[in-house]
Image (tube, rainbow, N blue to C red; front, side, top):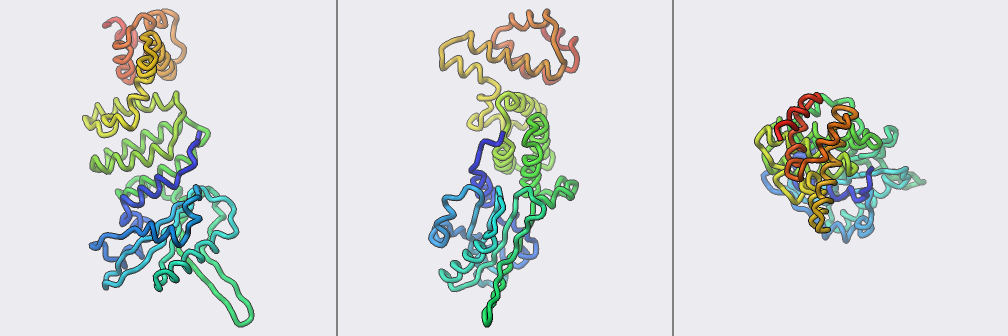
Length: 327
């Protein structure tokens, strides 16, 4: 199910969009030391010079950010996100090397912090050290483990910080890797939570993009997801997500229609839509009688699209039959 490997991309994007909120959520003591009236500066070019190898890695996301302490002095902050950690004996060493290169480049020490997104509870690197006769070194950095938030689920649900949603999406993506139907339900629940918490349209779209990226669904389940999301937004009269065609609602709901247009076959459009309708109806009601199959086969494309929305309100076969009688 999890075909994407470039998960550093959504992490980097969401961290840039909500950087103060991220530090407040994961590292509150550090957040209190900083002056957030001055916008943080993302030092991408400088970090690429310091760590050119990081640009080729797909298992982690790194940000080097200039921030300011409340007393006015600048501070360099290295934020490392280990997205898909594997056993790495040199992880702490890599953190030390980056910190050393930052000091060499700016002649100032960096505050180094890490977010560990892996699923191995025992893996908790936070120190690099060595000791030889006459020479010793101990480098320690702060690290948070997303897995620890599983025990704080109720607190996450109540927390309005955008990164509570980020953590919940990540944890449920891990938990439902081989359970697409369960993942769809959790994905819908997290998106409904965005509306219920009163997030702005901008925040809903930003957080949806992260949720959609990490909670990937197979094609059949994805179409069902878009149908239910559209119905929910129409009910609340806030079509923030499904009104944005670029993110794919038309690909989900009208996939048969689009393919048919490309191929120039009206029949292909109708059959693609009809197959989706049958799948969703049988998920809700079980095996359908042959008579219902016959009636569905007589619906045109416009009627099928109307049924795709209406069926979300059906719970019994008689309700479906009543709808068909009205056509």
